[in-house]
Image 1 (spheres, rainbow, N blue to C red):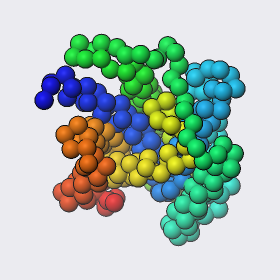
Image 2 (cartoon, rainbow, N blue to C red):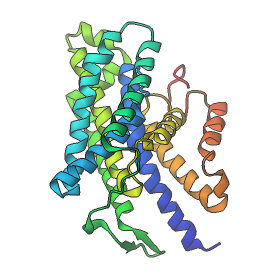
Image 3 (cartoon, rainbow, N blue to C red):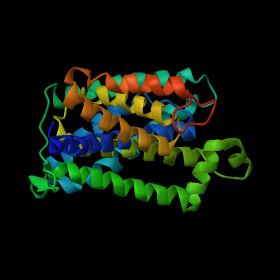
Image 4 (cartoon, one colour):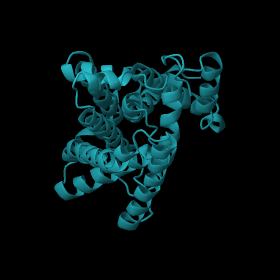
Length: 291
């Protein structure tokens, strides 16, 4: 098989993996800090795409959509944590799981009522259309842009979590929130910000993914499954695991689509099963925090 074709498919896998990384990061941050498995995550990804579509239509600018939509949906996520999830803290872990599961359906049906059930195309900005010569073949410029944006977000997130006081508090709170309360940290406010950050990252992934696929109410369903697969493979609560696993799954799906298209949909689940057989806690998860 042509080497250039294989390399192009590899780059396609990186672009797909970049979207998965963005979505899985939001899921991982929320679980690692709050211990909540957010089943509305895929629906919030979809809402982020629709918010970007609406903002782009109102302003005529994809760039405004890329900036404003994640912030707006992040604020929505903070409202969800404050008024819906917070009253469930200290109760059965099943309660927030069931709440977010139902919330996902509410969001999907609300979007169907507002925008209809048909998919809506979302074009990339003119500056990012076309292809670029990578030396081994031509690759869509927009997909390279997606990889670059995700890399920049990862860098900023690493700086925020590793080099700032806020990051120190987040990492400490993820390990022992009770100690943080004893030390006088407003844990409720911290959880609010963390949940908003996780939802905002998911919405950003939705806006970035929108020009690569039609925007539809069902677009979050598969993404939710993919995000859980990536999170489980990387290790529940592990940010490094979310990054590595997201890229790994993206490349695995893309390369399988080239050699065995009929297996592309299930290869990620087979990879997850294999990883769990060897390391139940995932690649970078802590023992006792397995799937």
